[in-house]
Image (tube, rainbow, N blue to C red):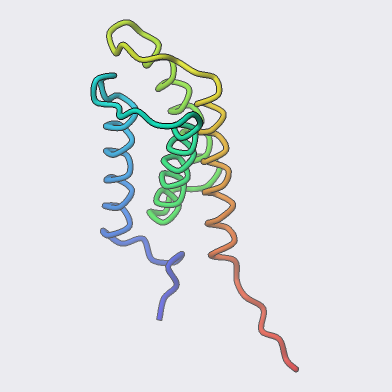
Length: 122
């Protein structure tokens, strides 16, 4: 049986593509489509979204360092675009920080999940 790390199937690439599409919908939704929530929940959404992007990107076979750099850049661009009048949302350094933490958490989680296990001989 092949490990999930060694197999970059159409399913893994499709999951990453869906995660990217979901991120576009969430990050660029008009303000009227963004539901109200208690303070701080939006930071959890940002963190979770970028964690998902990092996990699915690694599963799809994207190299970790390249993926991390691209996702951090994507996070910065989304915040700049959100700050433009055309989108009508607010740019936030705190949101970008949550995005970066999500990327780091996703990459670390992938590393932990795919690390070869040592067998212990008792």
